[in-house]
Every structure is written in C-alpha cells, then in structure tokens.
Amino acid sequence: MVAEVGIGRVLREHTAQINAIDFSHDGELLASSADDGRLCLYSCQHGSTSKTTNCSRHGCRLVRFTHDPYTVLVASAQEDGEIRYLSLHDDRYLRYFKAHTKRVVSLELSPKEDLFASAALDDTARIWDLRSTDCTAVMRFASEGEQPAVAFDPQGVVLAAACAGQTKLFDLRAYASGPFLTFPSEPHAPKSFSCIKFSSDGKMMLQCTAPHAPQPKVLLLDAFKGNLLQTFVGHDNSAGLPLEASFSADSDYVLAGSEDGSIWRWHTRTGLSLPVLKGHPGPVTAVKCSPTRMMMASACSYLCLWL
Image 1 (cartoon, rainbow, N blue to C red):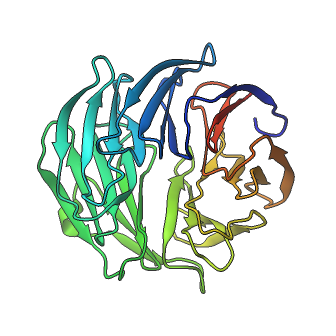
Image 2: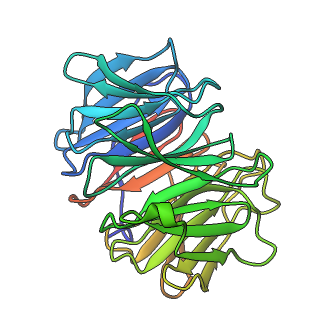
C-alpha cells in the first residue's frame, strides 16, 4: 500500500505544530489536534476541512475518535491530566474524566467496546468507560517520570502498557488479576515510549522510543512472546520530539516521522528501508494509515493526505 504514494492534498488549517491525528473507524473522517488549541475535522472522501473547533481554554494534546464518528476524546494540553468527551455535533463536552494528576501522553480507544485507556506522566495508566466519569482500573509504574504508552489489540481483549523498560499485557476480562505477561524491551533500549501499536492481526507490536533517546528507534516485537523481530533506525530526532510510528493498514510496512520533515518506511518482514517520502517543511510528529481507504496522513504544522 505505501510502496508508491504521492501527496493528494495539503490542508493548512493549523497555525502551530500538529500533535495528533486519528482516522474514524469507518475511515470517512480524520481529526487533528495542535498546539494552537484547535481541533480540526476533515472529510477523507473530499480531502477538505469539515469543521474546526476551538479548544484554547484547555488546549488539545491528543485526539481520538470514539465509535461515533462525531464524538472524540481530547486530552488536555495542560498539566491537570484531564480528558474530555466532546460532541462535534454541537461542540459540547459530554463528560470530563479527572483522575490523572499530570499530563496525559497516551490515549487509545478499545476497538470493540466503549472503553478507553490513558497513560500520563503521573506514573499511571488507567482504564475508563465512556459512560462513567469514574476510573475503572489503575496500573502503576515505578518509572520516575518516564513516558508510558498504552494500546489495545485489534480484538479489544488485550491492553498493553509500556513503561520503565517493560511491557505488561492485561486481559480486559480479568485486569484485576494483574498482567498475564510481562516482557522487557530490547536490552539497552530507553525506558520511555512515545507510542506502541499492534499490527492488524495482533501478532506484532511496534514500540517507538520516547523523546531524548540517544538514537530514535522503532522496535518490532512478537506480541505473544516479546521477542525482538526488527529494529528500524535512520530517522532523525535530535530535538527529542514525541514522534509517532505506525503500521500500514496491511501491516506489511512500518512508517515513522522524522525531525527533518521526511517520512521513513521499512518492510516489516525484512527490515529493509524504502526511499523516504518528502513533503513537509517541519518535523513530522504524526503519521497514520486509513483503516479503509488507500490513504495515509502525516502532519507537521499542516496535514498531508497521501494517495
């Protein structure tokens, strides 16, 4: 899918660095949040902006679609750790989730249920139900301020939480029993993660090293055993930005943004790199592939749609 791509549309709605992008589950919509305090919604069919919402009061550090494509979860850009449930129909906040005491750095929705997980710099990861403001479960790390990340497997049965050099896997049907599997990351790898992702079949896991790593790496692991399968390097992050890595929709490729404005691509199985993609004047902090369309999106201070 990503072997031969070109820019189909450039959207310049934001005036500052975009910090997160997300496709709706049906692939029809794309959302972006940025340091300018704005949240933008785009039509993937038309490649145009559908709506812009001002979130400047709290800021928007992360945005994730719920199963309703016109409601999203937004993590505050402030240090209060607040997560808000926003209706894009009328720009009304439906619910506030308050338990984290520091900034939320990872936010993911279950692919099957109205559950979501968050991880913050307060050394905790939490599970929530969209229907209640009360936190359902708490996982604590002895991380000393390192950056955690969370992810659901495609079946919505397993939650992965990575921090302090370890990845813990929880069965969502029995999370009170603790992790059913814990495996260490690659020896000498950083203890912080900017993101973790499961492949579409749930058999592999990406771990993207967090800001300020000596050399930025994207690690490919066996999701069942934790064995290191590939290490992808080459992209630049000397400024220590929270760069995102992602699988292609078919999981045959791995993509990652770079500080120099390029997008790096590697074959999942062989680890070999493809020619880098050029098109951004600034650091590419977010890159994702559509779940239903032959499209990928990447972001610096503006958004590129690749076809």
